Image (cartoon, rainbow, N blue to C red; front, top):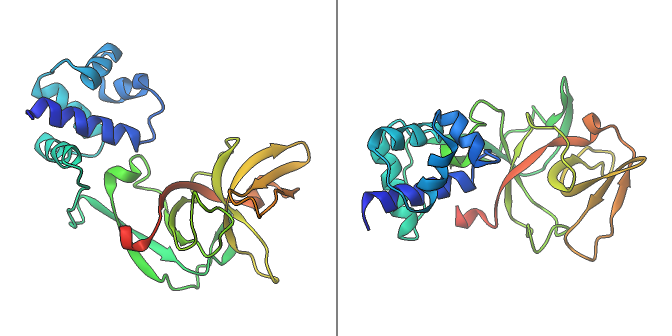
Length: 227
C-alpha cells in the first residue's frame, strides 16, 4: 500500500469523526476546490502541499504523522500515541451530579473527577477549546446502543438543539440533578426523552432547553477497557 492509500485512509477516518458536515466544508477549511476533496477521497493522487492542507485542518501539522495514522487505520489499528501534543485530557465523572452554571447545567464543580481520559485530538476535532467532560453511564436505558458501563464524551459548550440527536440531559432523581444520556425530540410543549431500551418508555419534559440540556454527546466507548 503506497502513501496515497495511507493518505486516503487517514482522510476518510478523520472526516468520519470530525464536525465537518460536507465535503464543501472541508474544501473551504483547507482552501482547495471541492472537486479536489471528492477526488482525494476516491482515487486521484494529489501533491504533498495539498495533502498537508488536509492534514492541517484535522490537527496534523506534519503530513507524515497524518500518513502514519492512515497506515494504522489501514492495518486495523487505532492511534497509540500518548503524548500531550496528540491527545487532550478530559475529566471523567462517575456520579453525573450536576450544578447550575452561568450558561446552563454543569457537572458538579466540587466533585473530584474519577479519572482523566486521554483522547486523541483528532477524535474531538473542532472542540479542543471546549470544556469537554466524560460521563460514566450507570444505567441501562440506552442499551444496547450505549450499554451500562460505557463512557460518553459530553460537550457542554455545544447546546444547540438538533432534533433526534443524543444529549446529556438534566434528569432529577431523589432531589438531585443527575446527567442522563437520552435521544431528544421536539414536542409541542417541550421535549421527548427517548431511551434505546424498550423497557424504558419515552418521557416528556416541559423544561426550558437551557435547563434541560447539559451538552451534546459527541463520542461513546462501550467500556473503559476498550479505550
